[in-house]
Image 1 (cartoon, rainbow, N blue to C red):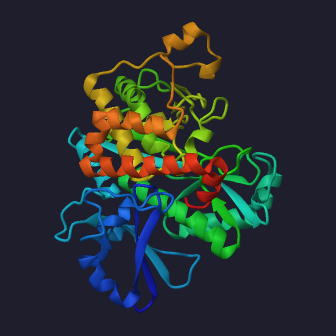
Image 2 (cartoon, one colour; image 1 turned 90 degrees about the vertical axis):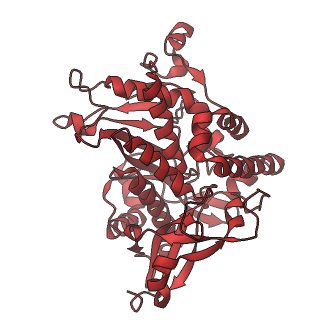
Image 3 (cartoon, helix red, strand yellow; image 1 turned 30 degrees about the vertical axis):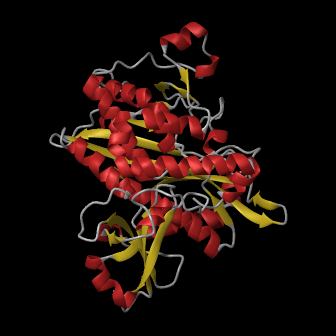
Amino acid sequence: MGKQLRIIRMLYCDPAGVIRGKTVHGSQWASKQHEGVGLTRAQNAVNLFEDLIPIEGMEPVGEVRIMPDIETFTVLPWLDKTASVFCDLTEQDGSEWGGCTRSVLKRAIAFAAEQDIEIKAAFESEFYLAEMTNDGPKPYANGPVYSSAGLDRAAHVVYDIVDNLVAQGIEVEQAINEYGPGQQEIAIKYDEALKAADKHLKFRDTVRGTTEVTHGLLASLAPKPFADGIGSGAHLHFSLWSKSKGKNLLYNKHEPTKLSEFGLHFVAGVLDHLPGLLALTCPSYVSYHRLQPHAWAGATISWGYDNRECAVRVASPFKGRESESINLELKACDGSTNPYLSLAGVILAGLDGVKRKLAAPAPAHRDPVLLSAAEQAACNIRPLPSSQSEALDALEKDQVLTDGLGEMMTRAYLATRRAENAKAKELGDDWARLATFSTF
């Protein structure tokens, strides 16, 4: 392997949701698999705008190790003799470090496993293709939504992305052109929770790498890259299964298109924690430009059956495989999220609802903001946090989520994100959009 590959990228996703890492030469790969690569503790105190934020325990003194998970190793089809692997950040003795986002999800998965529960998930991502002009990024290959014309115009780019995903073992289910000019969507097959998060990061890297390196264009998975354009989501689909029985716990055998009692408790937990959870699933300053009514983004604390204006949608099952295919979709999730943290947060929030046997309110049968006051009250529809700072305040008060993140991660997350918010407010919305246009 070392003789065939020139470079191996040892990657991780930091609290800001940025894919970072170090490279090693192929000749060094054999030793780096078990000894890792050194990384300053301060690196995870760098926020989305590349500012180093003072955080106790993340000073530029001492090192952690970037330790690869060999199961995530893939050769990158858009580059010559280059591979990547996703990694954990550990202490030098191999023990868990509180600044590793992947470890947060591992702990949430283990917590669910103690209750005989396995989570399967997939991120359904929208993104824009763009070209750089003297006036900044402009959408590329526009066409009417879902149209054959739109599919044709972007096909040479999208097909390369699809081929490169498949070459890395990622199963692609759909590829379509979306509502915004130059906006695309590719859906990949669900998998176990940790693999789903890893695959989402490989998806992001593949979209960006293929678009930039092969086609000389830009790709943006940012939640609102154009002020006057449709926002982009990374809708999180998930289901929960009995590990011992292999059954989908959301399935209701008496009403196959409706949720089970377990599923209703889980939804109630997600809704109960959604204000704080939003700081993980829609974490950036620009995220809140997307979370608007009538944008199919889930702009309220609400849920419904195939209701794309609710934050939580119950996706209708497919005939003949109802028990397998019924799943939940969190629409209030976007491409700026760290998938390890968002998926961990959903697991912890939902299982808290199961533990407390929370009752789900009535589902919304239409766009929540169009319901009467009485109907909104019956569905317990409430506004989501309207800004990054408001969501961060809610997260800080949410004991279930902060316990799940851990003390160091909570401090680092709140500090780096609040610094982002202050800078974006100072420099303005246009600056923030451009600064994060192709970060994700």
